[in-house]
Image (tube, rainbow, N blue to C red; front, side):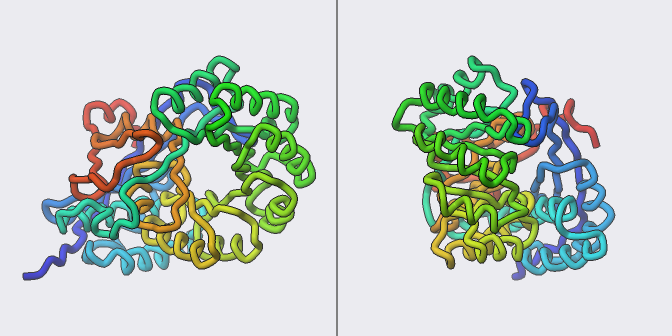
Length: 369
């Protein structure tokens, strides 16, 4: 008996969901978020994966990746991942092509686990039963009452003991408001909650060091992208001068990117996004690379795409429970998870694969492609 299941075809769909309020971070504002869904079809089994990307990622799936995967065994995900990476060589792998590839890779792992009748975490092999999460949002567009309500919801209602807000407003031109909001956040969550901030690369190098002094006064322990991650040497210089952990890596699209980040000693915890870096196949390699440097890894956003892979690595710090993506994934998918005391219980997973299915009637009004 053979379990080989060739991919028969690959399809894409695009869903766009408006934000529930205007949102912005230190360097960008947005009014909606687009999810590009990839579906792998092999006989009676389908696997789904997704990325948060522009609709152009769907074109990459349809035009550059679909033919490459036809006939490849769904069991041979690393082979398929390599074939996709070669197929987009001339289009350019970093960016939209990597996001498309990542969505398909996740779908392949989902399909493989479904063929074998296993939750994905069991296929990968669990290193832990539960995955710590941190509440993430706190957009710079929020007024005081909205910020406090969101923070208290995570801590008091969902029992999440770690939260993150956005700072670096308007490319670092609102330092006073940034620090005031950090003070407000600390007051809202109390002294025992882990408090994180994310500047999205909005500050200059010395400015970030100055701001960090105020962050330390409020017990902030996580300072994400104080400057652009395009400059790992600057991150390393800041890291050497500040008390909070310096973190970055969400914009890594290839494995060498993370090697360069680690070689520069740029971070205290490496971030990677499974929907950008090359899917689960490459995310697991990034985690191993971090572990070889004595560092932990944190999953960036898209919590349901990360959850099973996150439970499979021993050096996981946590996973980002990002407001927009949690809302979208609960809207578009059935089978989503809930944090219990700040953890996702992956060890009790029973459904095969990622355990997700598209919620047809709920999702339909948001389909745009």
